[in-house]
Length: 219
Image 1 (cartoon, rainbow, N blue to C red):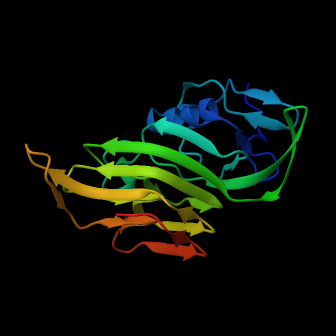
Image 2: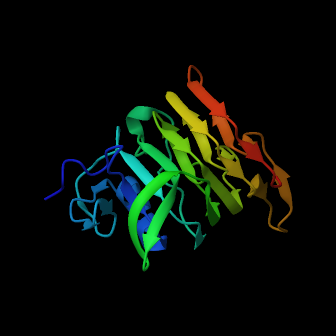
């Protein structure tokens, strides 16, 4: 069974590789919980999933390596407009300085920027590393690659497409090309409003903190 301390600040879920990230995405997008995750030494690692919804509110995730995901979905890939309908991440994700011995993670020594390189192309919903955040904390995460949204009506951002609630993004960086546009039959693009290097769009009434974040991509 799941160790009750997994996901705590002192014992975060650890994302070390593409398999872990894809399962993290799967857990949030498909309403699953990693109760069968393999635990290595002190840290809970996201390996397997089992059916049971959680948004990971109050849980911590540490990304210990840079990742090149290639084609992938945003975390929280469903089309959402309100927190009540969202399958969205509500925990804390941060880039971490992982300490390794013979290729095995033995400790986490503070926070450090870790970059996720993606190719995201959505035709429904919001585009970004995260589709939608509401009640989350994202720290020391970088995003590279391309984020494309061809809906013409939703949003696109490097870290997140749509953001609401009390949410914080700190010490993050995006170098991704962020594109929000529609295309005609001749593949001519018409740019739309609602794209940003870090955040695509902020919901009315949201309490958003953005600190020490930079954007150096194209849009």
